[in-house]
Length: 107
Image (tube, rainbow, N blue to C red; front, side, top):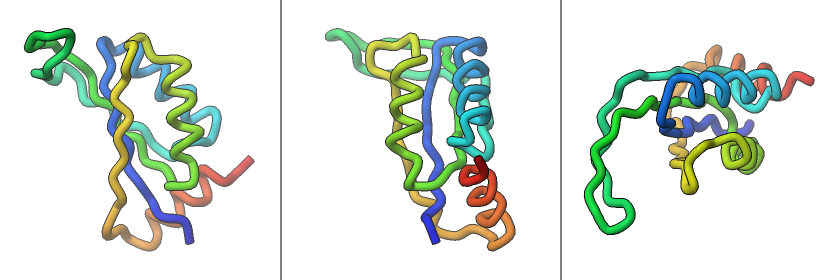
């Protein structure tokens, strides 16, 4: 069975987060996207420390879908260099994993 992953992606605003999430779900590339709003990000960019409010999308999908998710985010994202980071889900209930698998494979 394919490994479940969570992909982290930050966006500058809620509109971008909702748009990307909607397209991932419609394309069956993700089973679920959670948007955490008004997150504070501190990072180094263009030779200085930046402080920004961002939205964080937690994308639940399968490892086999990572490249397609990355391509969709890259095409739709307003940033020059969007955060697209995945982590493997070490433990997950069988029923939740089945739901993810059935959802992203259903076409």
